[in-house]
Length: 118
Image 1 (tube, one colour):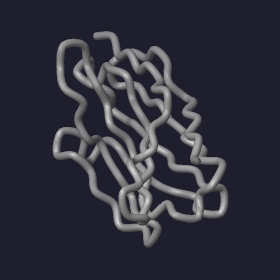
Image 2: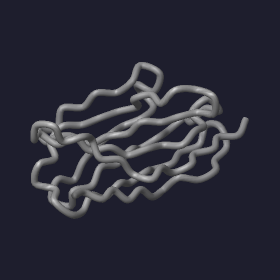
Image 3: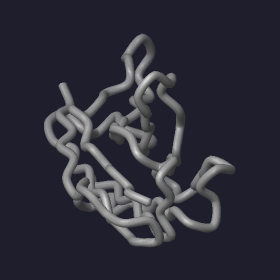
Image 4: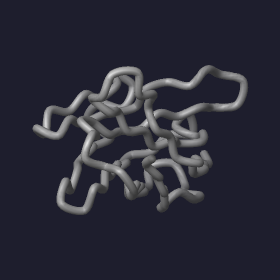
């Protein structure tokens, strides 16, 4: 099993910055990618950004140029640097980890709230 623990959420004014962290522990050898989803009230969960073990990153168009995803593989930790935050970035941000082993579902963190005020 893998446990994901997120940190770094909070409240910020529009235009501000936050940095989220997510540390994986447990049976982490099978993880091939980590990243972030978010969910705003009344909306479905959406992919924000992900990064593979090899460093290939995928960032949603809505945050491209403002958010950066990075990973410290030695620490099994993924980061999300969020700049120029907008009120529409408000939501619960969930860390995920993908395992290469067949029939192994993605792992999820408990979520961290990000609130951007106008």
